[in-house]
Length: 298
Image (cartoon, rainbow, N blue to C red; front, side, top):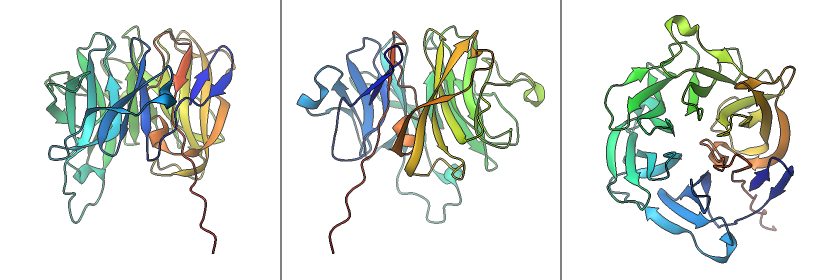
């Protein structure tokens, strides 16, 4: 699905049998990069439904690729989190999963593991990757060099944090957090939230949904979220009542008095767009929706 911010229209561009997740728009505007069945694929933006997805990379002997994938801003590389099988028999939480962050060229070549974590974004200069790490059953935001070195813990609050992404000016990392009692969009400087996370700044204040995965446009004027019903704060939920919400920004935060507004209500979950689907020109963004399988007649 594509939403045009200026025209305020929603268009279906591609339908596929299976679970198709988290489309990332390529820098040249020609393709969407998605995951399906543990592999990474691409489809053309123009005439998408006329062809089949083109497989970029997938090797289950190394890892099952997830919907935590993002493209470098220069359009040359993909970073993605995989899951190494088998899963632990007595798994207590996501922290027990071996989740390698892999980096590869756009054609799938040179795929290699650089770290562990739930990958969400690149810095505009390609130097850093930001991801969610789970230590002592607490999810926080981390940064590493793109080769996996120099890990930096960016948040320390006891509440859960997730979904970090850079702004185009390289000055901020936007993320979602439960530290206010529900999930909202926040931001912090790119060197971290500082002692006691005092530099973290709340961006959204909605009261009717749990607002996850803030995605900021390259021109810094818009932010959209994948939002859950209030009674489903855990992003494992898949069902009705999911929303795409949009916020007009000024200087990186909501305009005076502005708040998230719903542009779409749909059936889905976090795979709809847990990583950014913005086009490079900031005019449109893309996500996926699920269709219910009709119950068989008895």
